[in-house]
Amino acid sequence: MLDPDRIEALRNQPQAPASHVIGGELRPASDGTVLEVISPIDGSLLTTVPKGTREDAEAAIAAARRAFDEGGWPEMAPAARKKILLKWADLIEANALELAVLGVRDNGTEIGMALKAEPMSAVATIRYYAEAIDKIGGEIAPTAPGNLGLVHKEPAGVVGAIVPWNFPLMIGAWKLGPALAAGCTVVLKPAETASLTLLRIAELALEAGLPAGVLNVVTGEGAVVGDAIARSMEVDVLVFTGSGATGRRLLEASAQSNMKRVYLELGGKSPNIVFADAPDLDEAVKVSANGIFRNSGQVCVAGSRLLVERSLHDAFVEKLSAFTETMKVGDPLDPAVSAGAVNSLRQLEQNLAFVEEARAQGRTIVTGGTRILQETGGYYMAPTIVTDVKPDDRIAREEVFGPVLAVLPFDTEDEAVAIANGTDYGLAAAVWTGNLSRAHRMIRRIRAGVVHVNTYGGSDLTVPLGGVKQSGNGHDKSLHAFEKYLDLKTAWIKL
Ligand code: ADP
Image 1: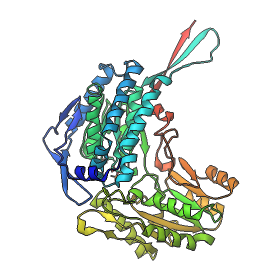
Image 2: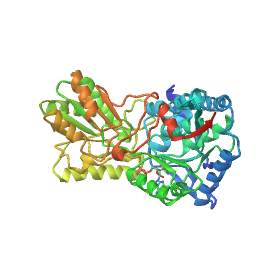
Image 3: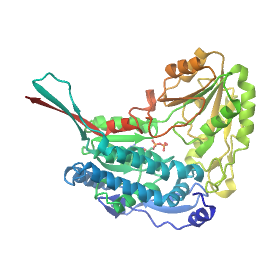
Image 4: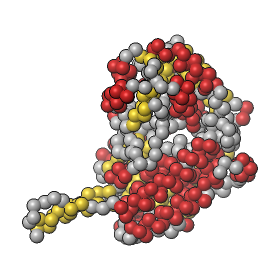
């Protein structure tokens, strides 16, 4: 599907100014203002999106409310809802390469990963939840004979979804798939620097027959549009993927408004732990490098801390750095690159500041550490490995969200666990070992939503993704994701 000629043809396709999708209509911002969309590939102006106002957010919420209360979406026969969602998935699939290239021009992810992880992942997600619509039901409680207890599962209402820029379609679909399948209606706010593909799939949803107002997409600033959604008295559930600082604001906004349920996925500082008895070191090297450097480290589950048993440390770092230097970084529309552009200049500067701080503290930059390809006008960073890192360093505790790997040695299993659990986060982890008992001990002891063994980052839709500690709460993916979008209602009937 990665036809280079088609990619080249799509690369320079002019993009008309984009519009919100509100109540089934394409609309500009209520005051006509726009945000410029700068392509991280070369720093050029790609197009504009509406700079949404509070009124825009409120109009979208009102449309979603009407579509839920009066529009018939929650009451529609499950098979009919399923048919529309499956048609939507087909339309996204038919436009997959166009969507992938548009997304890459908007956010900089390398095309090989973007096609799989963005439109095609959204297609799989929407199909998965569409197919589940008529396979989940309520319960009959095991009451004493004189009573009948029925447990209904009802759609929770209007969902506000606020999503980030690293994988807008994948993460967007993780919210939209189960929310829409459950019978909820949605107001979605994309990130400022990655809105275009989500607007496009909302248009395709209308084409697929999704009733007006069931899915609304409002672009603009987090502090305006996102805040209006978070504070709305008409939004019943708020789902979010993004930074901890914003997650905290959303919890406050909920507390200060209608106490809507808030589900947060907040990134991590995930430990990738290599024991000296790892079965295949070359595999561990390759997978560890990809686990932090693909998509320039802009992956919530990125393995950003490498913990290596001391006896293996120097040899492993040497192999890792040699492999990393073979990874091609550059034009994300070149199918041969391993890592494309950093999403924005702001993010690039933030990444470099972390490295400079580590350098100033006397840590060793084994490879990378610099901005590269500046002559293109784009935002590129060399994959960076930092050693001699101490567990209390900022680079070992805070999420960089860039291609920066902090390496720490350890001597014992207990020490590995203490370092691994020694941050505020708990999203992902990995353990490389040939010892089965050790693998299971580590799975139990590491506080994280997912622990990989002898791999990093693999997953599919059948298993949940969610964090513990300050990595968040609630789960995307798998049938568990429905829990966020369904309310339980008991009917207690005297017989
Ligand atoms: P990052 O720093 O990686 O961009 P953010 O948490 O700032 O992460 O962004 C994730 C999403 O949250 C984006 O859609 C952004 O617009 C939105 N957002 C940012 N600030 C707020 C806020 N105060 N209220 C609601 N949404 C916000």
